[in-house]
Every structure is written in C-alpha cells, then in structure tokens.
Length: 489
Image 1 (spheres, rainbow, N blue to C red):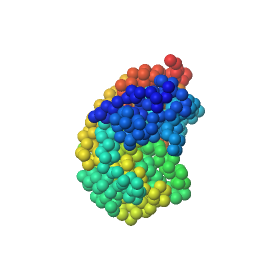
Image 2 (image 1 turned 45 degrees about the vertical axis):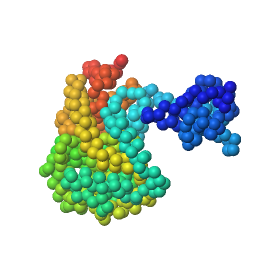
Image 3 (image 1 turned 60 degrees about the vertical axis):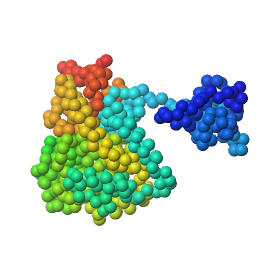
Image 4 (image 1 turned 90 degrees about the vertical axis):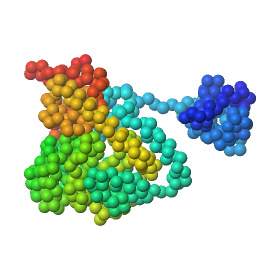
C-alpha cells in the first residue's frame, strides 16, 4: 500500500494550539511508521493532499518539509516526496538518551562543574549545587506567549542584522528599569546588550585587561570569572568577602600594592554567600577605587532575588568609574541569553566595537522576546513569584542543612544558595556525591587560589528532593574515631 492510493485518515482540527501543518506532519509520520509503508512509496502530490484533507497547499508544503527535515521522507525535484529508507528515518529520529550518572573526576575543577551543571539541566539527577532555577519554577507559558507575539509582529525584520548595541526598544526598557533603581543609564549612551552576563564580563576583560595586569575579585566569588581572566593573561587576587561586602581595609592594601585594572564585585545577592553590600562598605569601595584609579565591575546577576531596594555601587557612582553588568536569563530561562552592560559613554563605544569584531550583533529574536515580556508588564510579577518561592526554599534548605550538622556562620540575606561548612574536605564530599549522581559545588572552586575548603554551595532547589537529602545524610555521617568519613549506602 502507498500513501498515494490509501484514503486519507486525517482531518484538520481547527481552533486549537497545534497548527494544521503540525497535525498533518504528525499524522503522516504515524502512518509511515505504523502502517509499514515501503521505502520509496510516493506521497500524494501537494495539490492532491490539499484537496483530500481540505487544507491549503501552503499547509501541505510545510508538513512535507517538516517530514523531509526529520529524515522520514525524501524530496526529489520535479518528482515529489517519497518515503525514506528505514535506516535513514531511524537514524534521523534516534536521539541518544542522556547518561544516567555524572562522571566522577580525579579532581573537581571548574570545567567539570560547568559540564555537569549543563548536563544536570537536561538529564536525570539530583539537584545540589547548580546555579539554575528549576524549569518548573519559571513561567514557560509567559515565554511561549511572548515568542508567539514576536512571531506575529516581526515578519521580515529578522532578515537583517540587528543593531550593534542591541534591540533599541529593549535598551529603552532596560534604561527605564535601571533609572527606577537610581542608575542614570541612557539607552544610547550607556547601554549595550550582550549574550548574557558572561558575555558582558568577557567583553570588559578583553577590553580593559592585558597579560600581566592585576584584577581583584572577591573570595569566594563566581568561579567562571577566574577562567575568563586567566584567558586574557591576568593575575587574579582575592579579597575576602564578609557579610557586609569585601574587606575594605585589605582591598585598600592590595590595591596600593598591585595597582589593579579592575575589581569585580557582587554588590547585591553575592554568589555564593547570598549577602548584600552595606552602605558603609559601598562608599569605602568607591573611595578606594578613586584613590588607586581602578574600574569597578558590578556583577548584578542575582539582584532580582533581593527584596526591595539594595545598595548598588552604580547608583552611588552614577556610571562614572563603575560598569554594571546584568541579565535576564536566570529569571526567565537559561536559553534566553540576553544580558546588558551599563557603562560610561567613553567605554561603551569601545565595548560595542569589540562586540562587533567578535560576533557582529547579538541575536535579536531573544532580545525581542525579553522586550515583549518587559513591555507587557509581566516581568515584575513573575520576579515576585519566583523570589517568594526561592526565599521559602532557601530558608527551609538552610534549616535542614543545620539539622544535618552543617554550619552556616552567616545566613544568606537573599538568593538561591546556601554557603555551608560541612566540616570536612568539600571536594571529597562533592566527588562522592557525583559518584551517586548528585551535583555539589565545592568551596575550593570559588576561590582564585583553588585552595582546599570545607565549604559547599547548596542550591535551594534541592529542598523537596527526598533522594538528595537521603544521600546528604549518608555523606554527612560522622567519621569514625581516627579515620575518615565512611561513604556507604
């Protein structure tokens, strides 16, 4: 039997969320697979299928093209569409399942943790220390609605490059957000969109730092920046972080000794401790930066998780010596790589030029989607819902960790992490957790020295995962007298 000779069994269902082309393609795929149609069987012509099914020829063309893209049918110019050989169809449809377990390295390093974090977002496993909010805590419907709205309005606008500084309407929205916080950002003179915060930090490092230059960072701090700075040949020195911010006295001493080009700081909701800068420390940092003539880079990645107004260096400095870097991926979706840099005008044009040299313009589709969400007024309500859920989860997570004997010297002010002392080598614990399919981030990775640490970063998203807590109870069992911790099931 061939599709050309068999009667059509599909009829369009109008008025639902599934397009007619998708309905037709799915039905044809089912018939090819379930009815055992011979390879080489010819599909009805586009005209014949349109008449039989009562749809337009455009719908049939789209359905056939989807089947061809999936490898289930072959298109022969001037002859039509034909069922593909079985091996071709199976190969196209076969998607390898993700591995069920994390690999266990001899030593946990930054590259391993990054690979494991992205694997954890797509494969089974227990949450522990990853820096991603669970998908179910985000709003897929809001994002899907914004994507549909953008698709209905842009049409041919996607056929050209976007603006080098980023989608103008989005920059206007970002400027309004920042101005509401007290940051005097102008959409044209101070703002540049990026492919996330990491991209923004990369541009700044490549523009302002050269081989042998010193960059000061907090200790602990977000580990990815260490690798980025090493790539440009920088010498990275840590400044101890306290609950009120970096140790200002030591910052002053290190700046006098090393003459740094940059100091990178989390003012609001520090990663990994969850602390926020005090007003006194903020003023100290700006005075020290002025005294020793270095630029401050304010990483604002997790600030949306802070309730109410928070102390920002970019507000006090008014984008004079401070560069602010932020983004939307954490709160909306990791796949929406949309961030921004707010910088003094003299630096902004240089950053924009560097962005163009590296990749011309940033993809405008994601920027338009984020703009739609901001313009529709949905973002603020979404942030408030996520923040409430994160706060509840973090507080419960901290209590449960304390019950297991972990020490939290200073409770986080906000955010999705708990920075806890497990009383033993954190890397050893993380490696054993990885062997059992749980991702933990050892404290050693958060220091530029990579020195051994008894701290671990825990994600609040693990709070309701019974298997994760069962494993943690095993990992945190007291060591026998004179021995090391016994990791037994």
